[in-house]
Image (cartoon, rainbow, N blue to C red; front, side, top):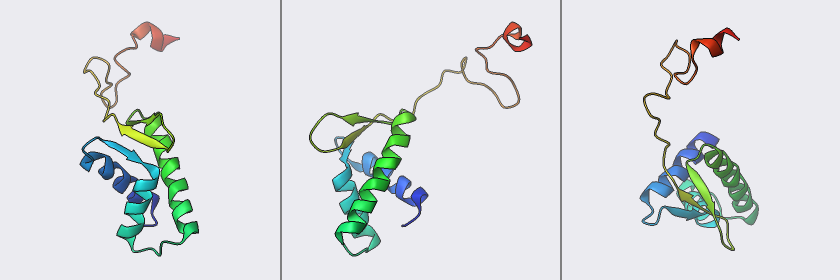
Length: 105
C-alpha cells in the first residue's frame, strides 16, 4: 500500500463506489489507513493526505476529477474524457486535426 500506483488506484475506486462521487481527502486517508493496517499515527495520516493531494492534482489536470468548493478539500469524479473518432490519432499516424500543410512546416 506504500506504492503510489496502488494508492492512486484505491483513490479512484473510492470515487467509483461513492454515491455522490465526491470524496474528501480526509475520508480517503482514513479509509486507506484502515485498509492498509497502518497504525493511525498523526504523521502517517498527514503523509497519506499529502500523497492523496498529489494524486488529486494529477487526476485534476487529466480532467478526471475537479476540486469542490468548501472548507475541507474535496474532489468530484468527472470520469474519463471521451474522444471523438475524428480527433483521435491512430498509432503510427499524425493527429487527425493536423493536415498535410501543418506537417510540412
